[in-house]
Amino acid sequence: MATNGYARVSTNSRDLLLQEQALRAAGCTAIWAEKISGARSDNRPKLKRLIGSLSPGDTVIVTRLDRLARSSRDLLNIVHQLNEVGALFKSLAEAWCDTTTPHGRLILTVLGGLAEFERSLIMARTQAGIAHARAIGKTFGRPASLTARQKLLIAERYANDETMSAIAKDFSVSEATISRVLRNKKMAP
Image 1 (cartoon, rainbow, N blue to C red):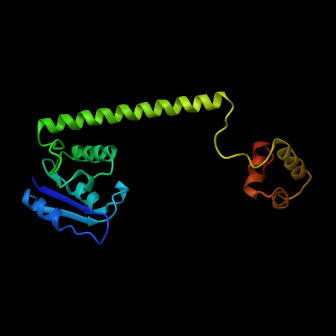
Image 2 (image 1 turned 30 degrees about the vertical axis):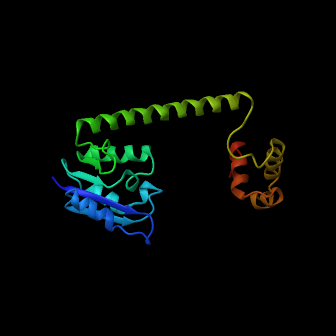
């Protein structure tokens, strides 16, 4: 069972020394350090490699949560990945965030439940907003580049042996748009 430290600073001008010292003092035998922005959790290669190298019973320690995660959702996702492997997690600055203790696991479980509840509320509000917008006639997606009348003219011109290229040029659209119009009218070549 290994104790791994993860240290991160967001710019090359910052120093990892203080984090590395604190992690060594906490008993970390390996420290994974990187100088990279934490804005996107999928853009931290050393964190990915650290998680990929873990075995059941290993522990990951950080000096502060903001070195690992940018949001509570990000934190819960990372802790979930650690749990999937059977690894434990601990933050030195936030004593409540420690899955090596029953109290820490309880707090993270409650936070996970709250995050899931918040996500379901957001989804429900989004769906209600979409339903309301549709009820009052709002259309979604990209606006149509051609009117129904223009589509009819395109079909007529194509039936009179005009090329898709010439028709597309006249209507200021791509040949792919002309092809879609004709396919919908069952006239495509």
